[in-house]
Image (cartoon, rainbow over all chains, first blue to last red; front, side):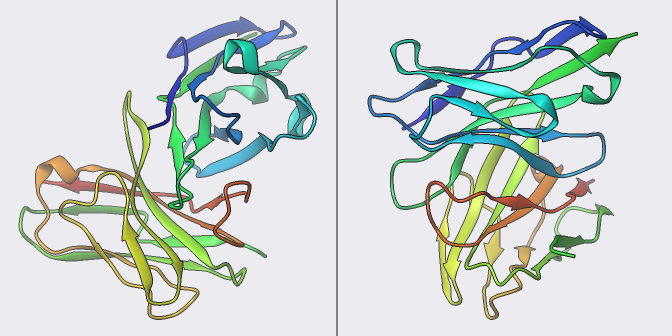
Length: 114
Length: 114
């Protein structure tokens, strides 16, 4: 079964600094990968997804992620953090079987310091 | 406005008292799913439905029931809630049951079982 590992339950950056949130997956075949963001007291919102097209995926709010098959990684980045980026971020992989469910990582809470 | 709605948003109940959390989507989506979110565990799928009258178990179905009598509604039923079902619950839907489809999430229902 698939699994997703997010390194770092909390990441703290200064406003204007680079944001890097790490995600590694376990799969012998290229999966479909997603990043979701959860703002306080809200549901999850899709940031971006990789579906075997371009390896560099651009999402909303200036975020992007690069699929690296050799590293089984799909790290999320943003060149310059904004206070409004403070939220919890979840990496997810789509299960290979017919259940079409998402397997989520445990999440990374991003804190943005003024 | 396209959305997934859940009711109630907050619920405190006692062990053994049957409850239902409703989920409704207005996007004519075929696929619907329930997840629970627990600290450090991310989101885990409870049940999913690929269409009306078609449901199946996810990763953590014990203690839960679902039904899909209409395309737009997918209620989650706890026949005899227990304290270990205290969690944050999310309903999600997607246009089709495909690995690349974006899942849209409801705002969540915070359930406390005493």
